[in-house]
Amino acid sequence: MPKFIANLHLEEFFSSAHKSGLSSNLVLSSLAFPLSIVSGLLLLDGALSASIASAGIGILGLIAAQAIKTRGQ
Image (cartoon, rainbow, N blue to C red; front, side, top):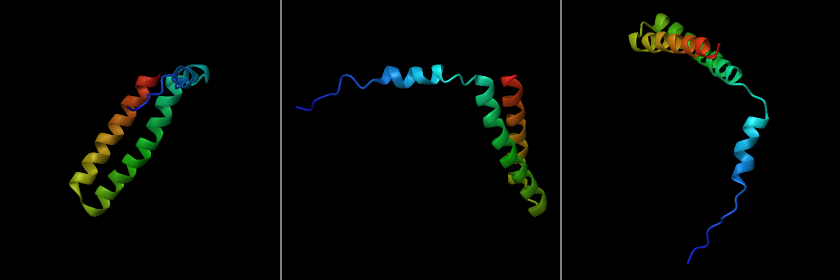
């Protein structure tokens, strides 16, 4: 029969995120910045290559990045 590991010290792993002091505002803003960069590049690519799908995804990404940024404030 397989043996199961009962004590994996998971409580230390999950509680370290609370101890590190990272606020949700910092995490959200750090997610919004790369999303806005990628979305801007997609929008630029859609404008230069006349790709409606790429431009549409870029616009949606910029809207999502702005929503994430305002949600964190």
